[in-house]
Image (cartoon, rainbow, N blue to C red):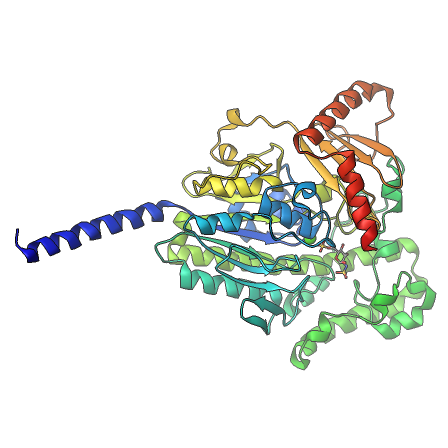
Length: 536
Ligand code: SGN
Ligand code: CA
């Protein structure tokens, strides 16, 4: 063979090799991890919502799988995110509450994706106080971020983007997909909504639309907490007593002043920060909100002096749902925009889409808003997964799965070895419809942030499909047991009921074993208490 022929042959072999290699890489699926902040499963129609239709999120259920028993390991924002990123419980990754800083020496799953040839990106809310590792590009909100004209932290410095936060985070994510989605390497993108976090500010058009709606009340709106322990009675998340007329229900400062003591609760920090998000609006944006704000305030001004506590509770519930669900509606529209783009671009075929929330939320059940408790509304979280060609559309799975499992699941989907010290289990057998290899019977839960906003006491517990056993500690020593099948609303603590003593004994033993398995202990509880107290 002459020199020229030899060169051609080498180039040809090289090309064949290169295209095979890129084919191998191409086979790896792209992953889009969508997470909202405080999205209750009760506000997703595929979960049977009585409150709202979410047709776009529902597509993921129809074309994938819905987990009806997905839960978190610690029902609060930053700890949930730390568990998701590290695949470890709070007491191991160290991010036990919103106050402690995240230890950036922890290995997070995006770093592992990045090390294994994936392009990685993160857009939206992280809430760590430090920047993410393992992402090629990011634009994240500082702390909780703002609904209107949000500021973003980027590797190149801060920038403000005008618009409504849910739309803006979607624009950033779509822009990334357009730039990076078509290349040879697969991508893993985290698309993280700020909504529907308190204080709830919908986009002006949704504000108008939802303020005109009336929603069905939950059966337990007027819960008196009899039959529960002292933690439920002392928590500060009751709509009547703790939801604020200004900050939450959007009553103007002048009217609050007129109400005087009757506008309780008002905490000093909120007296000066009415409608923080709204104050970021331009005059043009304000003009869109004003007519609705006027009609809310006019109605309340005319009625409040004669309203009973029961009527105030009902009014606050409606105001809450109008704003919360208005925020959800924008999330659903934007998930729709993203799914449409995946279809149009052809990316849908090889892209896994996951939808979840950092925890559940109370939508008036037990008279509450917020989260934190091991009780179902805050313990459970939505989880929908569309894995093209693998997961059968319309599947529903009721096994106990947890946010602890997400990192290992995504790594296994991408055929990347997960580190041995991650504490979850890959959900891929369930996603493939292979239930036989799934053996988990119980999950472990531990909440720490107390004393703090909403005053939910420290507790840990075990949850099986049938029962929930929790130990509240620190300033109390109380146990609660709920029969999940007979008492799904968790109204009766049967811990002291003679009929349940065998169950108590066996669950206490299983809880002890779980504490050992996950390396939690009374010594660690004490260590975190000391650390927490030293911060105050
Ligand atoms: C803020 C909220 C609380 C909420 C925490 C934690 N108040 O303090 O209601 O429980 O965040 O939420 S508000 O000023 O935003 O109205 S978390 O999702 O970040 O854990
Ligand atoms: Ca949250």
